[in-house]
Image (cartoon, rainbow over all chains, first blue to last red; front, top):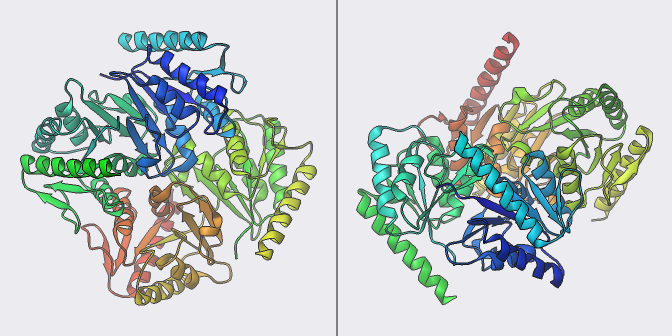
Length: 159
Length: 159
Length: 159
Length: 159
């Protein structure tokens, strides 16, 4: 059965505070989605994977290089693209909804791709670009993810 | 925990006989690997997914286009690349070992990428190129997959 | 001999005013660079190519699809990627310096890639993101392009 | 005006004999086509570029990495893809006709993509796969290239 997938994006290098935010976000999202996709490396990506992992939940890391060992230890399924940063597009396209945490131009390019493809993107202390959905807290972000996934799921059943 | 992943490649358009072979191969592989990756479309890809799917097993489809609905109904996780046939490289790089069924030039490009990246590739009635591992029957192919995955797993534990 | 390459980015759908701006920019840039690269389609891309083309100057279009005939008529060399919008990264990476004209999220993703790769990007009535170089007029934009290309060229000779 | 483009593929590591063949092939092809595209690195690619280069002729190198300096010195226009070996597809798709020289699995993947996209591919001492056009000598290969380009050009004028 098609899995619902939440994407988490944000900086590879980030503050301890942002890492903690990412881990708590991951844990909260695992109550709502079966599968999490991210860029598979360190920083926000690693912390979110660590938080998300529990019995029956799956983390996917779509990494820039060719070497599966570049992925962080909390990734269950590694997709090694060898495409470098162009893999950013694959990360967001694989997601049904995306949560953006603080990050720099890499995160900005991922937000831009979300907007371009009409993938809902929730900004939690990240870039404030016209079109993003803003959230102030983890529970608020997760609630928005839940609403979006439910709406998508009911649309699919209608087809 | 990092999942072991078997890849299945072969034609999008294929005979009923090849479809049946693919489905029986998928069913046999699900005894050996947790996760199967393929190109996510019809023909061999769809039949192998249908065979592989059972409780707790996961099928991944790395598709050429942007639209998740292009994937066959037996894919659990869709990676929509929008890369067209350049996605063939991603399919094989995501696998720890690959089984090739009959197919044309697309399958040949995937076998070539396996050889280039030293990904073991077992040819079951498919292209006979120097470097591929030949198998005559499904049990023989699956046995080779099992041996390769076990060897890779024991190497990882040594590290 | 390695060609100097200027990139022009901006909307596929745009106003008549922006089209005119793009064509005049293309004409002005052809005094400064040998080669222009763009996304190869319509709107800003087509107008800039039309302006840039003259004796001995070369336009390159890196297009999203597989069909060379999708490129506009003013492209000399078509690179058909079949990668969809992920080709945006290739457009900016092929350039030594980029001028951004008005555009939407596609243009934003290209600006983000410039920032990520330290490719100088001049915004002429386009997105105002920290890190872009702003220009108010075509001569101002072209003068900045000339300075950047000269500086890069003198650095290369030092190596 | 749209340029006619010939592609040359073959090994990155190759014998001195193959290098010489590639340089002589490049020189002969420059009498027939305006533009040559290749993978931009060493071996066959470098030798063919060296041979092809002369007044008014253009060499394009579509390289796997992000760094233009990875291209050989005889490439005029570098397209840095950052896609790794998935860039092989872009090399052949950019060509109107391809000549394959000796090479290993990378060359095989490129031949497979030619077959998949109906791009005529001439094998000069390279892989002998059903569908390739075989040539024994450089003049024979170049004559076939000329015929194919002329036929394509006359078809375009009919449209």
